[in-house]
Length: 234
Image (cartoon, rainbow, N blue to C red; front, side, top):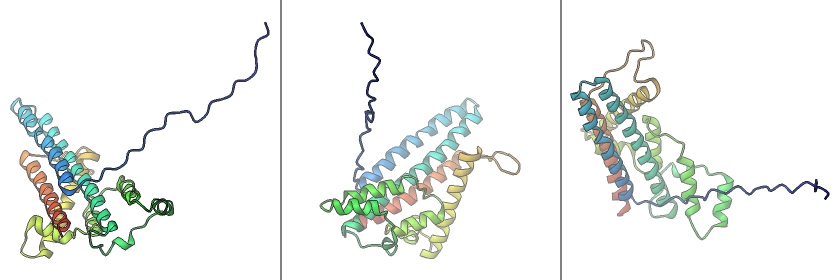
């Protein structure tokens, strides 16, 4: 019998496509619940650190404390991402007054065309926001200030509600320093093992420091949540 030496057709574009996940619209209370549940899990690590300390594993204990710093700061960033989508979508749909910076929000033409073709739904805008903010970090004092002012959660009022100094200006200046210090220590731990660049000496850390650090994050998140919730009731 003769062998069939003809070429068989090549199958192309048959790889299974990943299903596109549609971003979920969470309300402020749901977003806050995500934060609270995740932070609770981080705070439970105090018991692990205490156990290591009792067994005289000092370095292990401090490693847990440092990890709590990095994880808690990550939760703050994710919270701002989530509340940003909610606030800007409220502005887009007309349920919130637009912030001064809202009109400066740049949207690629490909997204605009998608929005025009899907005129019966506003979900395209929410999906755009989800993609837009997914790689941004809002933990430096300036980036946090710009983002909160963009989404209609005034940075000055947020810091005043969080830290309650005599004037809003004093609270804002104090809040800027707190945010700078939070971000600085997080970066030192995450990027240089909490060591000084000049001497390679590792910074010390205590449970009291971690508790105060996380307390400041809670104050900021609670303040943002309160303002967002109040605006949603208007």
